[in-house]
Amino acid sequence: MRKSRFTEEQIIRGLQQVEAGTAAKDVCGEHGIAGATYYRWKAKFGGMDVSEARRLRELEAENRRLKAEVADLTLDKQILKEALSKNGEPRGPARGGTPDQGCLCHQRTPCL
Image 1 (cartoon, rainbow, N blue to C red):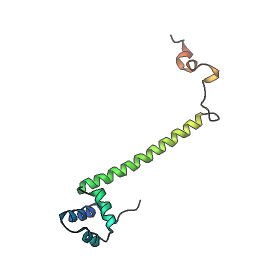
Image 2 (cartoon, one colour; image 1 turned 180 degrees about the horizontal axis):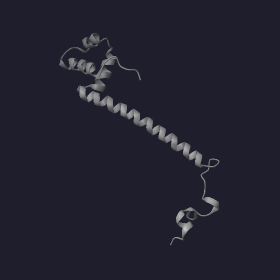
Image 3 (spheres, rainbow, N blue to C red; image 1 turned 30 degrees about the vertical axis):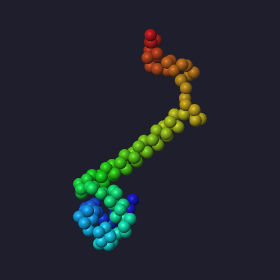
Image 4 (tube, one colour; image 1 turned 135 degrees about the horizontal axis):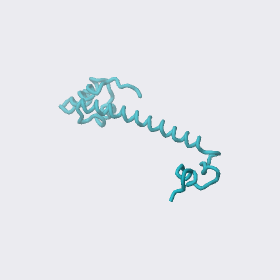
């Protein structure tokens, strides 16, 4: 993702200028941004403090990291399922017996 030219502090300061009474057009000209950019900033950062904006950025980074981790684990799970299957079908119990005969407790003594 492209890094913004403006920090959260600069964005919030610009938004606060408009809230204080400066025209949005003047703030856009001062920062060299388009009106659409101002309204996008307002939608994302409107009513926030600088500390809240930093926390938002940290949460977004953590969310990206966790999504990537889930994707990796899902891929690993699919690979393991394919490795355990034979010709695309799941394996049955060993030597054609019933599923209970394959467990360790039945190999030692019969279960009641």
